[in-house]
Length: 139
Image (cartoon, rainbow, N blue to C red):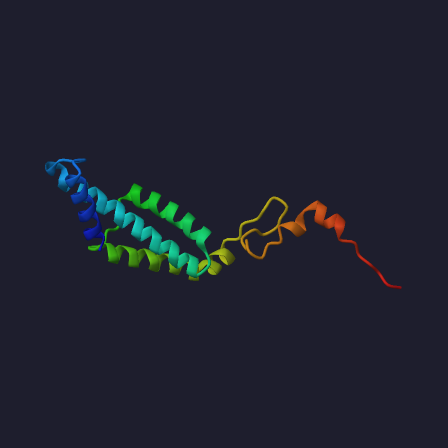
């Protein structure tokens, strides 16, 4: 599908005299790479949205792309294989995230554990909130 889209776009560029026929292969390849990049990242973000961890998936994609670009990464034979492998790695990290956070605890300056981002009550730790909470005693 991605191959067909890049082929149609490149042929349209040739028909409208944006590029010459000699440049067809170069632009076809470049569009193919860009389309695969967009489709692959869209699938990963869609999976992350379904499992409700989009922000962590964006950080994962950023770090994963930097690491893969620096190390020249592992390449599958097809784009579908690459996207499938990336989704599996992302889901594996998500499933084992609690184990990592329990083993390597991150502490804030005041000694509060900040690993559990979703259960950390940011507003209840502020001085304004503490001053509004008054204890009422009966008796």
